[in-house]
Length: 213
Image (cartoon, rainbow, N blue to C red; front, side, top):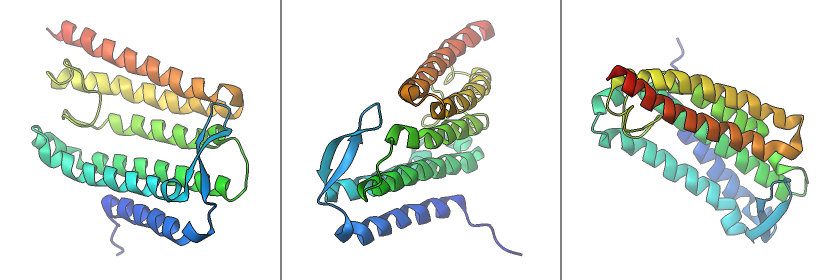
């Protein structure tokens, strides 16, 4: 029987692959790389290739190290062990998002011009839909989830708020896909649903807390 590769190991393998790509492609990339794009997906900022190639792998490595340490520092460590699988899956989800972004940056700087905002639509859609899936299983902790004074004070408020948040973030992921049909509104289709969902869940956690009291 084949053993399943641990999620954490897959995340580090992906991070390592991004490092290898950055090092291997260093000599072939232009001295000045596009590293910032405006709302229309047009490059409007450039940096040296050292920054352009190694920022993403550095961020990925730092975030994975942080994800490895945070559960051990959580005062609610017993809860963290319950959803350890979801925590590691979130780390992998973020790594996949960053690897996709890195790939898009490489392709652009190799001379293939496209709308970066439109290219990132599927990445953001998968990211937020995936977060929605994971939120439903997360238990009360200090580092991951919808942390308000009211969710942190009650398991009941936490669970109900995250059940709602799970649905809202999945909806955000689906709404973001509309960016393919309306590329001129991509930024709004990403930001507005997320802002509304965040405000809604915070308010909902307060209302549930008051109801429970």
